[in-house]
Length: 414
Picture 1 (tube, rainbow, N blue to C red):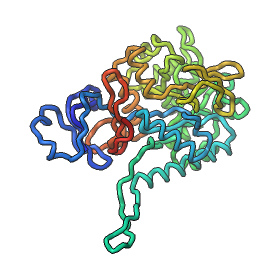
Picture 2 (cartoon, rainbow, N blue to C red):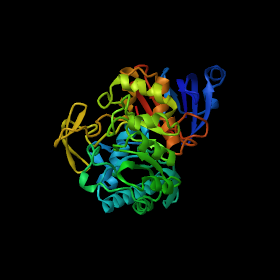
Picture 3 (tube, rainbow, N blue to C red):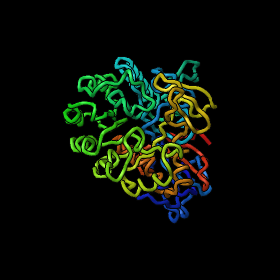
Picture 4 (cartoon, helix red, strand yellow):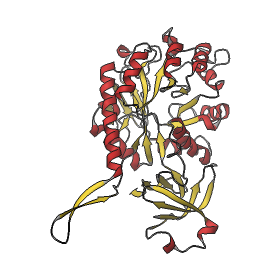
C-alpha cells in the first residue's frame, strides 16, 4: 500500500509533503514529494490511496481513560475491552492504556487478569488468521493470512487507585481507599502479567510512601494521583523516583503563589511527565496555555479521562461503582456533583486543544502520540510515522475532521 499526496507528520514535529509506503503492518518508506514525483506507482504497490493533501499523523495513544460506548475497563470482561478498543480505533486512537478505579484489591486483581488475557488474545489475533479453503482436490487447505485489525492495541493499564487520598477522591469510592503497600502493588503487577505501567499514590497518606516509591520505581512508573500533598511532600516523592502526574490540576491542591502544591513540584521536577485533560471542561484554556509554557511541550501528555458514557446519549451511568449524570460534555457524580471524568474521546480533546486553546497542531499531535509512547516505553514501535514502525496512521482534513484510519496497514475507517 502507498498513501500518496499527504502532509506527513515527521519526528521533528513538522509536516512534510510526500508519500508513505506500507508493507504488511509496518511503514516501509517515507518518500518526500520531490522524490515521489519521479517514481512510478507501479514500482511501489498496487494499492494506492490518494490522501488529497490530508494531514497524515500517527495513531493517537490514550494512556488515561476508563471506557466508552457503555463499557468500562473495570467491567472486567473481554467484551468490555473489545468494545472499548473498537470504538477508540474508529476515532483514530489506535493504542490505549485504560485506567482502573479505586476498587477492592481482589476485584482489581481480577480486572487486571482479564486485561492480561485480552492482551494475549489480541497479540495472537494480530499475528495471523488461519482460514480453511478448498484445494483443487477438494480437500481443506490451511492458509495463513494477515488479520485485519479493527481494535486499538492494549499497551498497558494505568492504576489510578486504590492508594489515593480521601480528601481528593473525586469520583473514586472512599471505602476502597488504602495506603500504598508494596506487597499489594506486586500483586497487581503479577495479576496483570506486567501490563500495569503506572501506579498512582497520594504520598501524604502514608509515612512509607518514599520507601514504597524507592522499592517499586524500577518495576513500574509511580504517579501522584488524587492527592492533597503540599509542595514539600510532592517534591520528596518526585526526588524518590515518582515520575508521573495524573490529570494535572484535577484532584489535587490548587496552584497558588504561596502554596504551589503538586503543580509547583511537578514544574520543578523536570523528569516528571504530565497528564492533562483538554475537554474544555476540566481546565480553562488560559491555564492549558500557561501549563504548556511552564512545563514545556515535551513533558505534556493529552489524555481524555473518558468514561463509559463517551459515545453514548445523555443519561445516568456508573464510574467506579458510583452513579454519574451525563449532560452534554459534562459528567458529574449524582451524589455531590463532582466532575466524574470526561465524555470526550482523545481525538476530540486534541481538536479542542488546537481550535479552542490555541496550541499549535504540531505540538498537540506530539502530546497525543510521541509523548505517551515514550511514557509507555514503546516509542520504538509506536508514536511516529517512521520507517520500521507500526503502520498506525490517521488522515485528517485541514479542519481536523477524520478522513481515514489505517491500523496495522489496513484501512479500518473512512
